[in-house]
Picture (cartoon, rainbow, N blue to C red):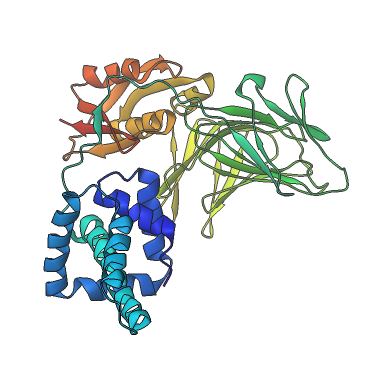
Length: 390
């Protein structure tokens, strides 16, 4: 069983209610790293007499500000010096188990406090009046293991024999004979445009992952997206452009369309111009402009829509036009990095309005106020939450 000095110090800080979140995580990791740790503590906690002694011991420790390891050392030395018999070494050995029990008491108290003791009301709750846009950076991970944090001020990415920014700044030179693959991840409050090696353009919305080869093979153009992306595909009738996304495959030769797979339960593909062949689970449909395909519960369906309702984000706008509340709040939460929590069953509500996504959250939430939606903006344990009720 591993009980290092670091763990002991964390135990001491816990007893003084002085653990930081990082230190709490360290203790939790220690408990999880070996079944022996958990089993040992469980065995201790099952003994009623031990729990009584533990509570008494805690009260004593709280009344004494001396470090517990120093107190243990003092008591041990006092016991040794009080005995001058030839059995001194044997007595020292008899003291060691008491020290181990003392450590066990402290650790058992820790488990009681963090695992079995009823949790006290969360005091780490802050009421927020507004939220500015996160200033996080997108990153690109290359298949050679290199990870690059992108510069928000440099704008779009361009792939044409090498990876660079739109202003010409080189990011990564590439060997024409290598099959280097890139995965781009965008954070909340951030969108990114990428020009692919064939001239196709892809705009990524916030919290989106996009995987693509820096150079397409001669006979294939295949990419993958998870999140939301808008495609302007360069025409090439000989080599179709394929997009894999949430269990579906989209195939085009030259067109513009939007893919939204934020929800794993329901994906949408909206066609702006051209045509699309879309397949999933053995089903296949073809879309014409102003049509949308829905993949839900493994089934494909299609309907006529106004594409602007689903593509305004590429102009950095929120656009709500008879948009149901849950869809609108999911969109807002993705952009501002909010957890949306419904405090009760919300009646069917539709939102209307248009606003730039560069605005602070309070300006966007005015749309909710106009629809008589009650909400509270808070932060708990570093997580920003929007509580909804009506």
